[in-house]
Image 1 (tube, rainbow, N blue to C red):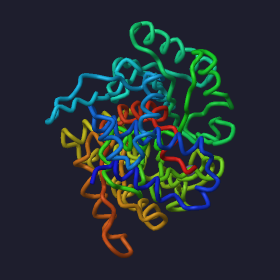
Image 2 (cartoon, protein in one colour):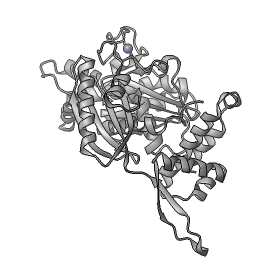
Image 3 (spheres, rainbow, N blue to C red):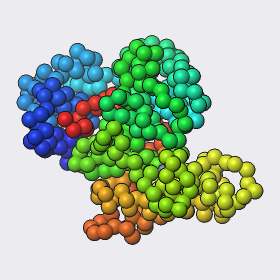
Image 4 (cartoon, rainbow, N blue to C red):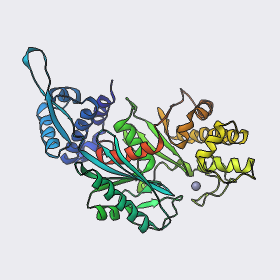
Length: 399
Ligand SMILES: [Zn+2]
């Protein structure tokens, strides 16, 4: 059974108290997202097939299609030739509609134009400093340049992926210990600067959205996506819904201490998981093993390992072991069917997969361990995720 059928099934299984509270507006939004996702997965597709696959009434499907055509999310294409003379008009996503995606990191930001099928039409990386107002100004300039280079595309909105947690109410970044920015209203500044609507989310949740919208999560309803870079972030889906928690703070596994006597973390705690398993931790291990070596980047560390440098190999092994060990908290808390991993470690996945899988298997309390799935290139996943924030606004969140 395909993931889209599965998503539909999930929608029907919303618990009853939630259904009673859900306004008809919410129900319409969910049905719209279901139809849109079916079109994305099965395009080109006829209205009749959409009704059959979604389980929605034909009249409901027709209403949604009219709305999506009016909003230009989809287009009518050629007519299909079926037996017995029936010639339904086929529907597909409108490639001319695009999203501007921004991925903010502690030292750099990447801006891209992404179409509804997840293709990156243009991408540009810029350095950012410790002054958020300046950084946002250069991000806006970059977005305008990219928009001007594609005059035929219609920009639907902006998706922003950030290395921290976004308060669900205020839509402000409230917890980003690795970013070192003073309080700043990122989302509304970008909206004002561009005159477009924006959605902003934690990078891990954005990556999870990307896997749901563009990816291969057939039938998985319980999953955790871990981003491994400067820190460790997590996006959580349980029973088919994204979990955000109070203030959007759910999923901070990276700041659960593995060893309270361990190194001081940017969150002011000691020995947090990310102090042992992030890419920064791997660089620290390498520096400890090779104290005279110059400071290197994580990519340089991967290259050294590829050349057979014993200390680089050992540093990565330690990182992998701690990644697997910390996942025990995740599996004990949530028992996901799948653990997805995003970030730079996926570009040398052969060095990590076996060690993490062995740790997962050793710490599984009962039943089989979760499947371990690497996502595509980290930065692409985050950019597509930022775009998916705009495409899938309602269906994965609890009503
Ligand atoms: Zn911490």
